[in-house]
Image 1: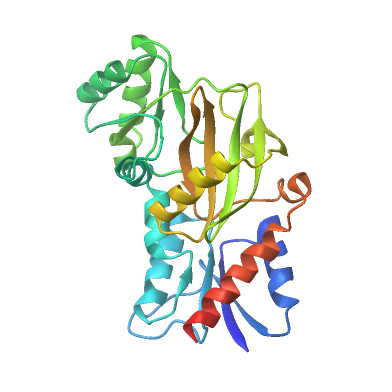
Image 2: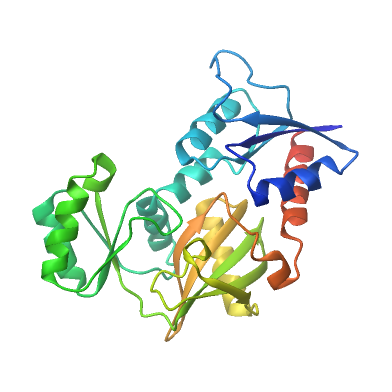
Length: 282
């Protein structure tokens, strides 16, 4: 019997699919662990499980609880190292650059004056992003110096994470981007996310359609996944003149709009990976 701890914040559509897949397997015993309802004594083993499947909505909760489990010898999917690398946009970008994987240019700044200089160094338009965040929230497209000054002043007033200025080159997308799903070392499927808005996340209204996988796309995604540390990953790609560039990588991917769209049983493949990870440790 393989004992799987399932860490969650709330049971969204994705978590329900994953639990249905896990609990339908006779060789698996599932322990549900709420990341808000339970406290953890760091001197004690947090649960009698063989692997933790981390599906917290909260980046911070998932990261620290994963570290507690790992400190007691329990593997986590995805690991806290991968979560740390994906959850911080600077860290993701730096790893991609170090591994010579195409990614939009990023300039970092740490006060308002240098942030304005960073924006002008990148050029207009460019994008201001929080270093930690998801679902396309608190992104700002900066078109000129006036909006740059306004956005920078506003961000500086929001709190410590927003006083770290991550300034990214704007990629003029063809009305869509690509979300690619990598499990282990395999690109299993991909979708286009199309929108009239420059932010194409499906959480912000983007429409999902199937994206055919090419050898070039598969090679790029596999290299990027290895650079991050591997696991269950969703990569956001932009189409550019000479191929693709990788924008971000997500470690607790949403996939509700991608199962029927691609014809791939994504939760089944995710669960198979988690079970294989646990079996390898037994």
